[in-house]
Image (tube, rainbow, N blue to C red; front, side, top):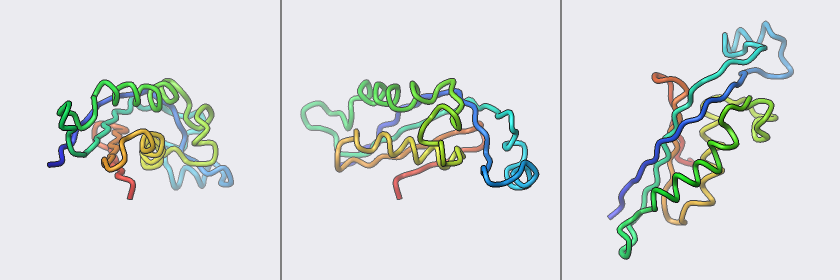
Length: 136
């Protein structure tokens, strides 16, 4: 029996989608208003899902309190109210698209989730735009 547990979290962050080697005109052609040289922000909603067999002693796939604290330490504290391009080292040479942010979050969490458990990260950039990454 495999069960999935989910934990929601959120963070607010600014970013700019652009390639350093392109001029503003080319960046605007590709990334539109998201390439604003003065940045823009989102209220990101995050769902972290862990799938595995429940521990026969506790009944937990993963203690949700532990998952909450892990997300707080690895995602919320380093990303919340930050300019992702400038203040988060993972994005110094990586465009902080929703796709790339989800992969970075997955990589930060994967090593801290029990081996044999599956991890999935769903990141909402807006209520209508979201991505999911499962490590594939």
